[in-house]
Image 1: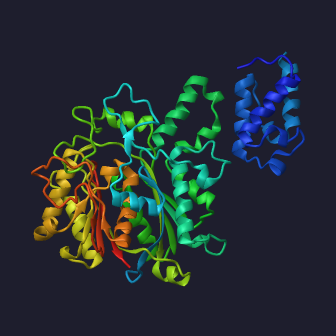
Image 2 (image 1 turned 90 degrees about the vertical axis):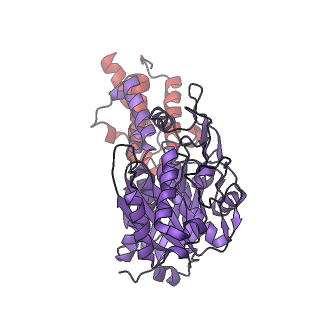
Length: 88
Length: 409
C-alpha cells in the first residue's frame, strides 16, 4: 500500500500497468483517452476490479456514484488528483 | 414421453491420465495411471502424498489466452471439456436453436477453495479492499453458468451437487428434460478440481489412503484403505435421437435408463443394507427393458474404501444372482482416483469407449485378493470384449445411489 502525495508520471505509468493486467491489453496498446467500454471491451466486473485494485494500492476511496463517470484512463487520473488535493 | 430415445453425440474429457476422448480411451485400454505425487499442493505435513491431477491441462489450449485470469480451476476444466464436446458433436449453438439447448453440471466440493481464497482476502486486507472479481467463483453454480454464458446456451442451466452420485444425477436430469420435450440437446457436465481445501478436508475426515496404512488406490484389493483424490471434467452432449438424426450427428451410444434412490443412513456413512443401491440397479434394468444377463460390463463406483467396494460387490451379487460372477466389473478410479462429482461423467465417457472400441478397462493396482470382493474385476490389464450394454454405478457415503445403462446404438 502506498500513501499518495502527488500523481507523478511514474505513478500514472504504474496505474496504467495495473489496468493493463486487468483488461489483458499491453500498456503500449492503449492511451489515456481510449474509451474503456467501447474501445477496450471493459465489462462491469473488470471496472469494479480496477477500482478495487487502485483503492487497495493507493488507499483511496471511490464513491459508488463516481464509478460510472469513469469512461477512460484520464478520468481516473483526474479523480485521483482531486482526491489528493482534498485530503492533502 | 417414453418413446423418445436419448443418444450421446459428443464427448469432451479432461482426465488425470489423458486429455481428449480418443487419448482417454487409449489410456484406459493400456491401464495408464493418472495418479502421481501431488504437485498442485504441498503435502509435506501429510501422510498422504498422491493425487489424480490433470497435470498436463492448460486451459489456454482450449479457451484462448484472454479472460481466464479470474476463473477458478473447476470452471477452466469444465469450460475446456465443453469446447471439446461441442466440437466433437459438431453442435453449433445459434439464435435459432439456443432455447432448446441446456447445460447441467455435476460439481460439489471444488467450490471450497474459491470460498477460502475470497475469505482469506477479506480477512487479510479487510472487507473494503477485497477484489470483487474473486466473488463469482465462490458460488457453486459458477462453472455451469460460465459454460452457459461462454457458449451462449439459453435453454436452461442447472447445477447438481449430490456428491458421489452427482455425475449420473446430472445425466438423469438431462434425460428427463429430453424425454419431456423441454430440451433437444443438453451438455451433461461433471467437474471437480483438486485443491488444498479438498485435500485437507478429506484427509482430516479420515477418507484419504495413506493415513494408517500404505498409500494405494487399489479398489477391491484387500490392502485398500481409503481414497486418493482425483480431479477432472467431462462434458457429454446428449440429444433427442430425432434431433441428432435430423442434424446428421454421429451417434456414439444410447442412454437406456437412469435411476436414483436415496437411502440416507448417518452422516458420511453407508447404509449396510444397501437398499438404495440395489433398488437403483433393479429399477434401471426394468426401465431399460433388460434382464440381468444382458449386462456385458459393470463400470463400478469402487474407490478403494473398505466398505464402498465390499458393499457394491454385495449389491451386485444380490441383484445379479447367478449372473454376478459372469459379468466383468472394473473400477476406472484405480487409474484416476476418486473425483467425487466428476466420477460419474468419467465413467460414462469410459463406458462409451468400452462399447465403441470393444474393451473393458482394467482395475489396476490389484495384488491381494479380498474374500469379500470376489467378482470378475478385470484386474491389471484390459480385456477385449464385444460390449452392448454397460451398467454404470454411482454411490458413496451419504445416501445417494444412481445407476445408468448405456448401450450400443
